[in-house]
Figure 1 (cartoon, rainbow, N blue to C red):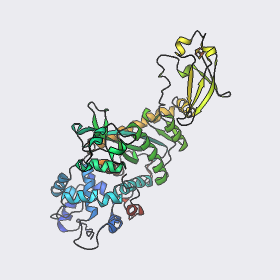
Figure 2 (tube, rainbow, N blue to C red; figure 1 turned 180 degrees about the horizontal axis):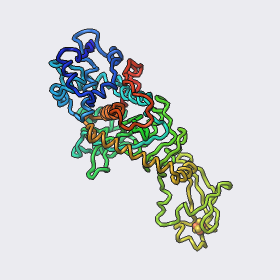
Figure 3 (cartoon, protein in one colour; figure 1 turned 135 degrees about the vertical axis):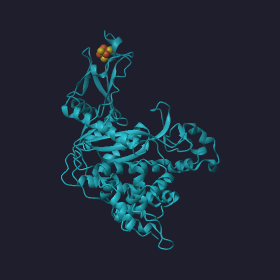
Figure 4 (tube, protein in one colour; figure 1 turned 45 degrees about the horizontal axis):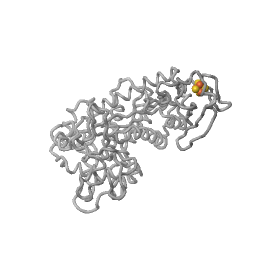
Length: 472
Ligand code: SF4
């Protein structure tokens, strides 16, 4: 049975506490932005109708928010702090003397019904909708970026994937590895061999994390992926992926599609760093109706000291290249599988050519043109505009969000394990960042605000019961 929602601010002791808390206390300002009344109704079908009443879910969610706002990552410590700290108690609507839930209750709910129902995704999206309603989201410029967050996994627990092949008895593996193997839909390792595209190294503790050498010493971790509206700094979408560049680019794509579907968010310009500068991603951004303000990822200059493709002029009308010696490289084949067109000079021209030593070690020179080359050329031209320089400046604001999330809100290292755990922590972090933006003191410089923001309302929306955006 779902616990009764009690407002512990109405008793005599509570009224005194209410009067003691400064009017512009951070938790008071955040509290004004929150309306979790619909939460109990949205979760009602996940509680048994019989037995002892459960702990009120609003209380647990408020405790999670307190923990994230103040960077308290340990559930045990959070329960202690809520017990002693009067401001935390006020925010959680706990009357003085009322008992604080046991940390295992908090843990069980957040890993169980909250995660299954997608409560944290729903809460985060409610903050985005509120930011949009408050006129904070400009909708013209956006930035995508990812930052490494260490997993709760030691480098000493690293194992080779190949070692799994030798383990015939799957029951001897730790629970996270068994879950990860189940997630991958991997057949018995001894029969199927390593899964396709699987990493070479795994953590025995948290196999969904990725080994990354980006830090001084390699570590296991996840990527905190953000899609941020600039210059407002509103986080429009957030996603957890293993800390691999390819996964981060995929996440950028997914976040743009999801935010367009959920909020109709279609920025005119999208800024990102070179990691997102592949032709495929640039074309995707253009397909979404935005101008990519992203440095193009150039591989054409990796020619070992020979002429780069820049030295060859492309004749668009005749679909051919002309080399520095004025000879023609004609079109040979279109490799659709990898998205390139191949052009080749004649060995008759290259054989006696005086420039051959600088051009090729083969009998003839070949160059390739990517299918996305037109987009890449457009983006290269865009880098010379003032708007591009502005986008690059605005993009730096995302670094501030990463810094805040890590240094103030406890996201320097994850506390929960697995991709679902990382997603949950990132969602609560992004929720808090948006709430703090909404709850800024009056007089704080706010761009494009039309009216005072109304509370973030979490209602019994269908997405709670469907768990549509439950962690992946
Ligand atoms: S080697 Fe061939 S492709 Fe290169 S400059 Fe000479 S003729 Fe042109």
